[in-house]
Image (cartoon, rainbow, N blue to C red):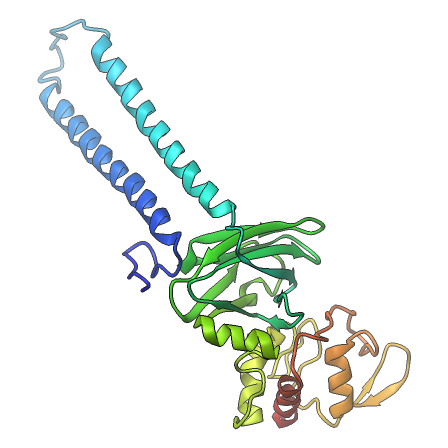
Length: 317
């Protein structure tokens, strides 16, 4: 089971988390002990050897103490070596994935995370993983520098354009765990969030065989409410407002049914087909006054998710 966190750390959600926390606690309490000892000694010497009068002369001319100087040199040296060796071993454990790890391709771009699995399926801002099995993430960026961070798993790695980085984890039990981008990547940086959805191993295997992940069909859900959730979880809110304010892209407020002028001079009525095309092929038609900044979501949203987003946009009068 996942272990409870501490005052400093969130709940431990992966097998490596305990090793990281133990090292953190060792370094932290070591610093606390030495801080207290050094501060107490400093106060003691200040009080004990304070000059009692303006004309009082020093009673000793001792300039150094070899034993003391050796102690405060070699004791910290030994402690630093211990911390380095310990930390390096944890680093190696985090860096080298087990040979049987499930591999997931991760593509980062402003301001979303795309995950592709070995069965060819893709998910957007939701990483599905099995409990009790190692998962290796092979990551790269399509635009600028990003950083993949899951606090509960104690894993963090830069995601760099034109090269690959990797990190791995083994989730201890099913649940949802927050993913953050921890490298400033533009105006939508703070909304570049995603979730690790850890499933029981059997449920994960069934989803891999079907090629459809939990929550993608939306069966039995109110499409408008689902679309509202997707508007945030798929980071549409990073570029499109719902209150009429101008962001990177046009506001969704009152958008459906409008006649929009394109950069090529044509006028297009905003209907279901136009919205779907704009989601899947956003550069096909660019609204006048806006840059072609939106990436394609083709293959990243199910038909049900696309329909729900359209329903939500239609509801914003």
